[in-house]
Amino acid sequence: MNKIINLQKNIPRIGFLFGVTMMTMLALLVFGVQSAYAVITSQLDLGDRGSEVTELQTYLATDVSIYPEGLVTGYFGQLTKAAVERFQTSVGIVSQGTPATTGYGRVGPLTQAAINARLGGGGNVGGDVYAPTIKSINVTTDNDGASVTWTASEASMGKVYYSTSPIRISNIFDATGVFSGEPIVTGTLAQYDGLARVTHTVNINNLTSNTTYYYLIVVFDSSKNVSITTPASFRTAQ
Image (cartoon, rainbow, N blue to C red; front, top):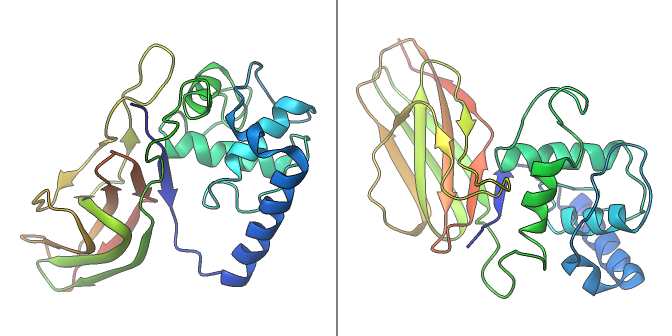
């Protein structure tokens, strides 16, 4: 079954998120809850208007890490474009370029298929489609190692990848552009025991002193809903 993936960021803006939640609830009342289960039949781009843009925004607004503004207006503006970019990055379709060169920020064939797979036309309706939220990430280092800790919103498995080169993320998609497995991450996989937990600690050993390392956290629940942090870095002590 196809699962939702979130690209996680730490954004401690409780008041802002409360306002977004209220706007999203009002939007759902105005446009109809059933709107979230309609498929998108057209490719969409900046400047488009209409019911399909409304469907797109309604879906994107269900995840504040993708579309924090949560506005359902029926107009494909810059906020919607940014939300589409976050969605494309989170599921590994594309993460750079422009709508004209790579399709970044527009709903082209792959993005349309990936969104429709998560809606009533082929998504995991009725099952668990919510990825764990990653919170309170902390990294402590010494001269030859590091310890990465975080908490998750539910019991989940967590992996940490690290490298002296910037981390890259890619994915496996079927012919329709639908995600079909865990993300492929460059770098070395740190210790991993395959156990589900809320509080995570991953130790990375045998590092080189006074060196910058890039790292990325992948967390997934029993339904294979995946959250991925944006790549970050730490430096070992001398």
